[in-house]
Length: 68
Image (cartoon, rainbow, N blue to C red; front, side, top):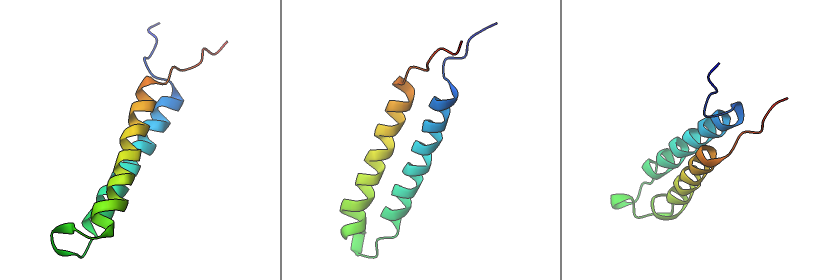
């Protein structure tokens, strides 16, 4: 049998990262200031997007534990 490169936890973390990215981009789009130069577009949204990318990197690099 071939072993899958990612475990269940990896896929759960990847989905959580994608959802976090979508939330971050949605928050940036909700900014009502001109050209998105308000708090949502310049501070909160990018921080959430950065968190999503860090979560994705962690999900890819996380080594699944061997089940006995």
